[in-house]
Length: 235
Image 1: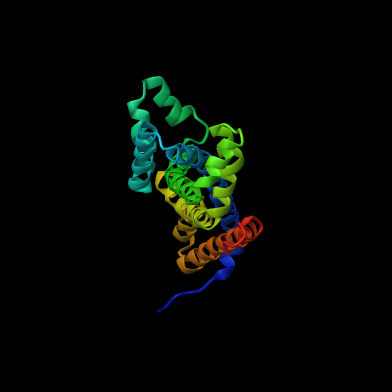
Image 2: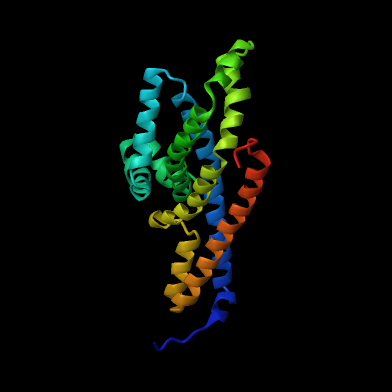
């Protein structure tokens, strides 16, 4: 293979700046989407665990809808289809007047997709707790909402830290799909560098190292969280 290696291109301008901004965009999209996914997923997961037939039907529909439709398709639906289904003023605002519409769309799509997976984890974590926990909380005078807030949810989260770690890692990898709707995150910036310099090996190697570094950092942080929050006897 006759290939001219040039690692210095990664440290020259504007390509180094592109990598930095792409990495920051990936981190911002992933973290904001994760906060939204954690909040929405916890809410849906708690409702799903209540046992009410109608509520479970609604939450199961939400989970099935957002978990079973591919994330790429959801990106396209939110970016290209939803604005066309809304009234003209609202659709124009979403497509043109909203600041950074592609970034907002990526966060919404990624957040809702991940929230459906978080909801399953939260519901499973609550179901894994001994039934006596809920009954004891109610018997001690707590309302059902207080029992969830002070007893069930804190324990459930301590149980599901390992699967949540996996979801947290996955959201960084899934953020790369945002390039399909015009978001210049890390993968898109890498492709841009390759198209300008024809140094594809160097560019994609740099992206690989950055993604691996992010994953290792998240793993170390979550392992520390898991050790600090684990219920006695579960590890």
